[in-house]
Picture 1 (cartoon, one colour):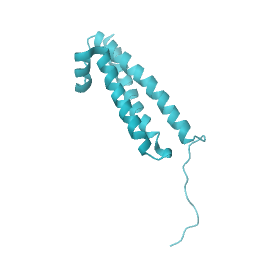
Picture 2 (cartoon, rainbow, N blue to C red):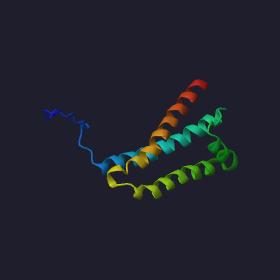
Picture 3 (cartoon, rainbow, N blue to C red):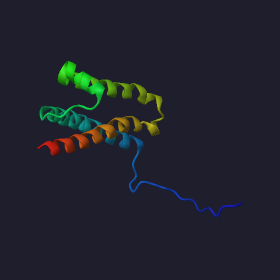
Picture 4 (cartoon, rainbow, N blue to C red):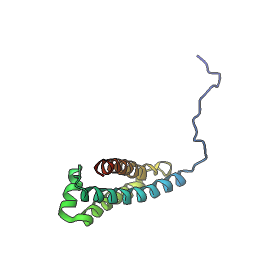
Length: 116
């Protein structure tokens, strides 16, 4: 069997370095972290309930400081694990934090919009 050198190469539409991609995701971590905290506490103020049992326990026990400690712990674990990855793959750490927190913000906004 032979190949006519017809290979598909998938590339992003723009040239993005691994460092730039990681920087983008760290910025998204910051934005989504603030968004998650704000929308969570707005939702709680409106009578909604926190669905994550760990976050609920932290908020019930320590309020905003508990939520900040929980988020700080997640970021800290990510920062400890980050050097274990090759440089080309380090963006997975902030992406793994930012994507779920961004999804949480979207869900929180939806839930808040249904109560107003």
